[in-house]
Amino acid sequence: MKIDLLIKGGTVFDGTGEEPFEADVGIAGDKIAFIYKKIRVKGSKSQRVKSEKIIDAKDLAVSPGFIDTHAHSEFTLLADPRAEGKLFQGITTEINGNCGLSAAPLYKDALKHREEDLRELGVKERWSNLKDYFKILGRKGIAINFVTLAGHGNIRASVIGYRDKAPDDTELMRMQALLRKTIDAGATGLSTGLIYPPGIYSNTEELIELCKVLPSLRSPLARGGWGGSIYASHMRSEGDKLIESIKEIIRTGKEANIKVHISHIKTSGKENWHKIDEAISLIEIARKKGIKITCDRYPYTAASTDLDAVLPSWTYEGGTKKELNRLKSLKVREKIKKEILHKHIDKDYWRRVSISSVASQKNKWMEGKTLSYISRHTNKSPVDTLFHILIDERLRVGAIFSSMNEDNLKRFLSLPYTMIGSDSSARCTSGQTCKGKPHPRGFGSFPRFLGKYVRDEKLMNMSEAIFKITMLPAKTFDIDGRGIIKKGAFADIVVFDPEKIIDRATFDKPFLKPEGIYYVIVNGSPVVREGEFTGNMAGRILKQRPL
Image 1 (tube, one colour):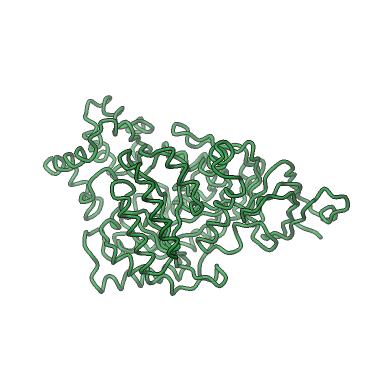
Image 2 (cartoon, rainbow, N blue to C red; image 1 turned 90 degrees about the vertical axis):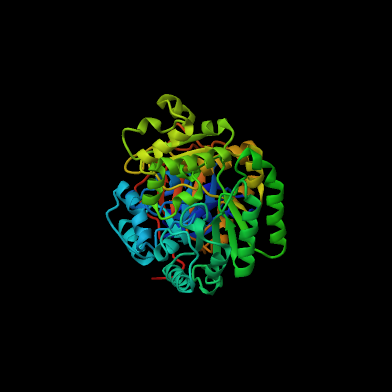
């Protein structure tokens, strides 16, 4: 037999969660051609295979490519399609379009709201629907497989804008039609970001009515399954209203009869850490009642989002311009200040909020610094410092919030229905996306999970861990033929050293590559060889429906 690539003598973790085995894995084209076990037996079939390219995987693990269940790469991939930060972690497929923000639809206010993002990244192309976005992305080429959800924020902003109102019957029908169109173009489900505008203005009934659209949309990607039937949510609260938020997503899954998925599950804020028992209990009772509910989590105790997430929700109404005008008004700012100080009584709070990125050159010195530090150096109170930065940067400020508990993190990671999501965009070690001091999860999530939490802290065995980052997300998001090593599956494969794999990225140096990952193969093509990017753009757009 002649094949294109032979991975020889590795310990295969096939993604099913079963015990690993020693084998040769042969790749022909973009598929796995064979798996020959017990390769060291004299005269075995593997010795009669011809391949010009051989990877010696002796003493190394051979796994399906990792699937990042929570990514935000829809725009950064257009700016730089290499996706090094993801590939160096062993990620071969991303689920994008999370937290209510997807590549499309982008009509009216939705497009206006994204213009600054696109300009900042140097993206010149514009589009309005997912079909056109896929064409642009396909022409550029990508190094990683791309799956997307349809963002509720995009849909709502395209129809209603950023107004704080419930949709009337006509608007709801237009939103449902736009969701159908986006799913029909290839999206795999719906996502919401219920702490961000305009998702924050929606009520549960609106979400249920939209989710009811999803089960009727068939997916050829999942054989015999139904695509468009998952709802992933950045819930309304991950702290003070955590329990109520979990109840809402369970209700949505039940009434719309769909799978539901909690994005980056957490107990945010020390005063909410004790809620973990009730949170897990709610989820497990729902699962026993037949509601298909899963979640994802990044293996860090610090979160990252826009700095203006600190502001009261009413300040967002009407869009960026109106939000800025409110901040510039002394009278309104005093009202905002009172609400913020009432919510964050602990002065140490400002030591746990740091700036990860700013748009202007003059404020670059703030990146990596806490609001407490910046306030001391600018002779302002932390809240006034917050206002000053937001106004000066026209709201374009990223921040990192340290508010979680390590023991709770381990419990969430250990749940059998929890997957790993980096909650980051694809960035590179140079170029347009190598800016600021973003959260290290963009380069470290998966090796940190396997190295620190699986190998060193023994939260679970390696087979279980590999299942959680390969076959489980493939099944959850209806991605057929991936997440498993078997004959006929797509050849998305990672070769790594279980004894050496670990993250190196830090909050101060977030672009450092992990250790212990040597080869990453996407659709049969090596994109990482001996730890270095090969330049191969072997990724594909994985659509739920053909164009």
